[in-house]
Length: 220
Ligand SMILES: C[S@@+](CC[C@H](N)C(=O)[O-])C[C@H]1O[C@@H](n2cnc3c(N)ncnc32)[C@H](O)[C@@H]1O
Image (cartoon, rainbow, N blue to C red; front, top):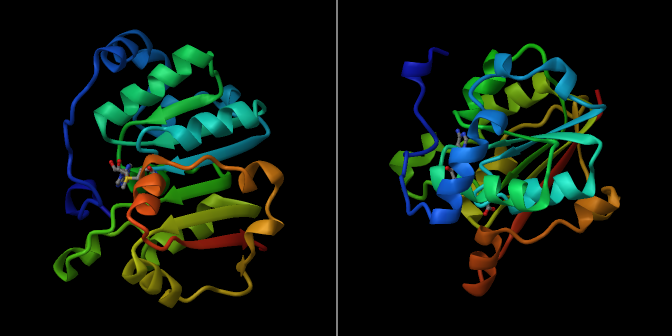
């Protein structure tokens, strides 16, 4: 689909950028931020490749980087303050195996023929609660088709939301049982069982909202 025709799953917010984030943006932007797959060097990608979609403040991306130094991790985010926050973590902890994709992750996946993922995380995507906005949600039929193409065999897709309606809609999307298997959290590798709580997860828990998870393994 042409970029202009696509209904975006986000509205570009500026948000407050702290002085720490500003400094990290100034110093580290060129080294860590990319806009499309051609900005990546093949040699950067190690044996395993992960994608954290809409990383927010970057807690999960930074955790993956620490937990799996031999994994290459692309964090996708369009929110400048979130990017600044992850760049600060990169600087403070000298994390090297992260690239930040500062563009629509759907366009990135559609236009990339070179990179295939072992792990894709989508935690608390924008819920777009009004009915007229549901079509903006990231996870829908055509997104699953993209995952079919871009996730490696044995790869994992891990989805969390605190919006029951979103979850119900995701569960209605027909899974090809020859391609995907639903698995339980306890079947995951240890580092994925011990993921940190993200800002949005904490907010959901504070408000006593239920958390819904779907974990898929690509079997073909
Ligand atoms: C509700 S926040 C969740 C953040 C984080 N995953 C967490 O759990 O705290 C969703 C984020 O996804 C980002 N986002 C939405 N659509 C996106 C897209 N198409 N490409 C990249 N990022 C996107 C938004 O900017 C937003 O920061």
